[in-house]
Image (cartoon, rainbow, N blue to C red):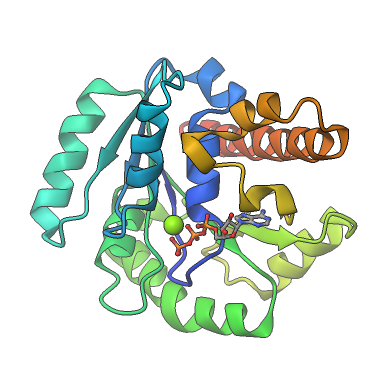
Length: 240
Ligand SMILES: Nc1ncnc2c1ncn2[C@@H]1O[C@H](COP(=O)(O)OP(=O)(O)OP(=O)(O)O)[C@@H](O)[C@H]1O
Ligand SMILES: [Mg+2]
């Protein structure tokens, strides 16, 4: 099973979500081995993983792989061999203004593509001009990909009503892109939870003496579990 986090626009939370989904309870319940794969040449997650190893944080079911080649065949071969040894692959793609090679490969090979997107005029314009044409082309080549692409409303004000946001996206999206039935709320705790290679669960333990930050962190854990649950439901529907 392959799930990708994709958004050609940078800084929408792809890497943050990818690593926390890989360490989420829901994914650990559903899969025995999880490969967290980074396509980003900048190596944000690679550096984070290195810090994780240096600090001896548990990885248990999760392995990490950095594939940053710009040769399509090299990327595809890398994915094929990781897929042989893992039940779930979570791919983090870079924000790409040109070429969009990694975005295109991830969209073409995934069972489910999650597209974290903010609701602003700029982001929506970027989505329709840059990413939607890629998705349309993939569906044209492979009609089975219809139903694989889902927007995840990101950086959502925690006070806003989830249903209204989802309704808003459903109205502006073309028929070949869905909207996940959950949101990725804006929370300041995401800014620095990942120092020293921590995932949110370890960060939460590290701040247990600070009630305010601890509560924030536990809310983000709930957000991620809800997103993981929704992704699993989508995968189930696609496989029946
Ligand atoms: N839900 C959130 N609420 C608040 N801040 C967030 C949230 N998710 C991520 N961030 C912060 O926003 C910044 C961008 O996040 P992240 O690196 O995950 O985005 P990205 O889509 O992977 O970016 P890029 O396209 O550059 O790879 C980071 O500083 C991160 O800590
Ligand atoms: Mg990233």
